[in-house]
Image (cartoon, rainbow, N blue to C red):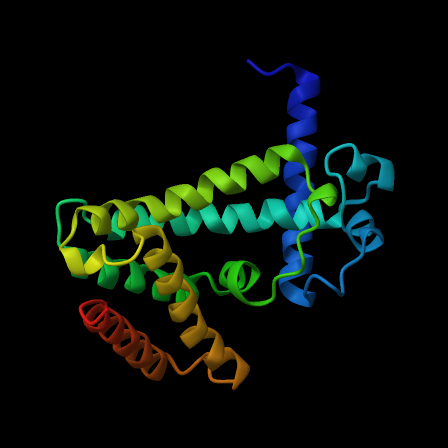
Length: 204
C-alpha cells in the first residue's frame, strides 16, 4: 500500500496533469508557461519541478495519456483472427473515431506537436511512450505479418508507419483547411484512402 506521503505526491501529480491538460488544450503548448501552471495549481515552481522535469515533460505525460487511449481503441478494433484488409479498415476507423471523439488528444499526438527534446523529458515517460507506441502498432503489425504476400512485399512495420502517416495526413488536411467539423467528408476521404492503400499494396 502507498504511504501517506506517496499518496499526497500522486495526488499532486494528478492535479498538475489535470490543470495543465486543460490549459494546453485550451491555449496550445506554446502559449502556456510554467508560471501559468503554477497559478492554476496554486503551487510554486519547486513543487512542479519535484514532479516533472519541464513543461515539455508535463506535455509528454499528457500525450502518453492520449497514446494509451488510442492503443486501447486499436486493440479492440483489430481482430487478430481476421484478414489483413479488415485490420487496415478497422484500425483506420479506430483512428477516425479517436479524432472525432477525443479531438484534443488527437491534436496533441498528430497535429500540433512541439519538438521533443530528450533532455527535457523524464526517462520514465520516454520509456512508457515507447511501450505504448509499440502496443498501438502490434495488433495491425501482427496481422500484416501473417497476411497474404502482397502485405509482406515491403517490411510490415514500414507498411504500418506509412499507413498511419497517410491517414493522419488526410485528417490533418481537413484541420488545415478549417474543415475538421465536416465529418461526412472526412469519413469519406479516410475510407477512400484506406481502400486505395489496400489496393495499392497488391501493385508493389
